[in-house]
Length: 432
Image (cartoon, rainbow, N blue to C red):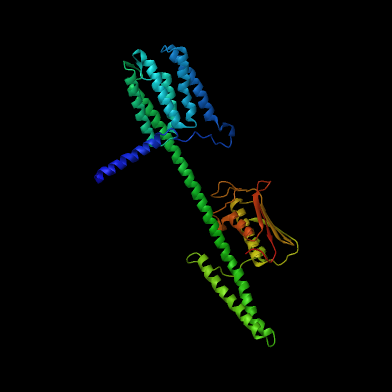
């Protein structure tokens, strides 16, 4: 067999497999319930309405076949009920419903034309078939719509073959136009729904990516800040290891050697920390100048906030006590970010900062009242950004608290403002 012939055979075989898959009775997805959180009772409304429509179409078919086409009463009832059943079947198995409707349509048309003439498809049968086409068109592949339309025309020709004679309206042209229009409309709706679904999925993925990127950026920022804390500890270890042998007269060589090893390891750790910081620092960025701040600089933070126009008061309770450097830094940054959020999202509001030293750590709380002006560039005054602001807002505060094994809560206040509360452990074994 020539190569061209083999390719043609393979192409034809693939086309037949695709056709079989498209037209299989099990093809097509069932009609899903509506998902409207505000009105959960309408979830199964489409199924209920289509069920009622099937009942109405069954009764109408029975009446029309019996009165207009002189079909015997029992046969008219059987054909009318059977013709409407595919509407219910399409709710769960669309293609099975279509095949059933097509077969019943051919049978009903042959019965009506058995006296030698009449419409190609009786009106009640045609109406049911159009409803079935609309349901199927929303639940199957677009290419299957063309195949369904061609098979519909083929079935119409089969009716003329089985029951020949003069054809009254609707004729073959009208049947082709009506069924084609319904399939085109259903396909257009299906394309629009699919496009909206893809857009919704892409939007969800983009938001998830932005959130993940913001989380990584915030963790990198926190790691850069904590580098100074860890580097300070390692420097102290190196200095103490170097000075320790001189504090003991005639120290044993084993002890002096151990201190030299400790100092060398501390210096190596400092070198690796600098390399890690280089990886975390943005391209072209530089290390932050000066020591990292702590709660000892709270007065400066409040003064800067007041200078920027924020009406802020502070309340400290409990005896101040030294905090581990990581906790001290994180407490300062959480207060700083909370004040910045209040300034951006609630301009003109009264803000209260509370710092309470506890035996097991420190508790922080920043509460602002309702905004007295409309925030620029923001849809509402009581919203807090999870990303996009310096430090990424609540995301950064939550990461700092979680890193230390603490807790952070945030939400609207009873008076219409906003409150941020955090509890950070003051143990020496906090997680850094």
